[in-house]
Figure 1 (tube, rainbow, N blue to C red):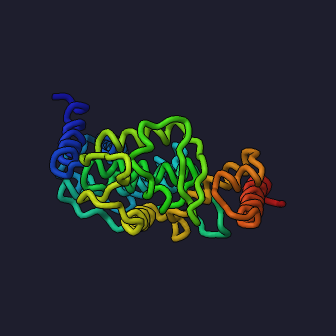
Figure 2 (cartoon, rainbow, N blue to C red):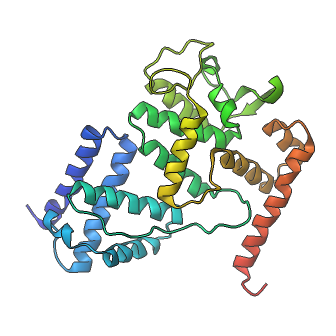
Figure 3 (tube, rainbow, N blue to C red):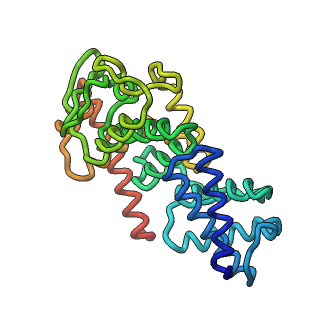
Length: 298
């Protein structure tokens, strides 16, 4: 077996462990296997030779910093770099090596602002990857996509009945004070919900809740919030990244793309326009940040 073939053995064994022993989703298995392959390739170049399993005990915090710097040179966001570090730790732990202590990259705290799309996806991936079962991973992904991609409140998403299936281009949402509204669905959001519905093990009667807990009961908002808290801590995204922040991001991104306040009020289900107007100030703060970054002397 050549060096390249030997180098592929560890990531494949790691992937097999994730898929069979840990029952991780196929997406997680592919992502973590790719990280293991990148780490071994980097260390082979960094140390000047093929890296075997026993060699991993030599790895230091400086080696990991060098690896992350190399990856950041490929334009990774902070959240993506933090996820890469999380995968490296999982790989080293599987290999019987205690990962060196290393603080992950942080996202700067500041005024309230929308969560960047790349960070939303990283958060959703991290939450789903931590799920115990593939169908739970699909469920968590679908819920977070509804918050970010359709602007639903967490209670609105979890109250959706199975009767919304099969999905069309819109869904009817029951909001605060019993008011209903029609919300358009992006194809990506619809696919996420349909993928969950196809994987979940429960009988979906029309009036029953679409999203179920691990034992088949109604999924609690506390479960979603707890998963988001754990994921954002691993990604160092900061306390402001909450399920409601994803709805907030939906609103500010739409405003930035030209939606007017009346349209936004209708999509969000706000009772008064004053509730919606807060997004103009937040969007202005975000634009000011972009201006300052582009013009450091401004």
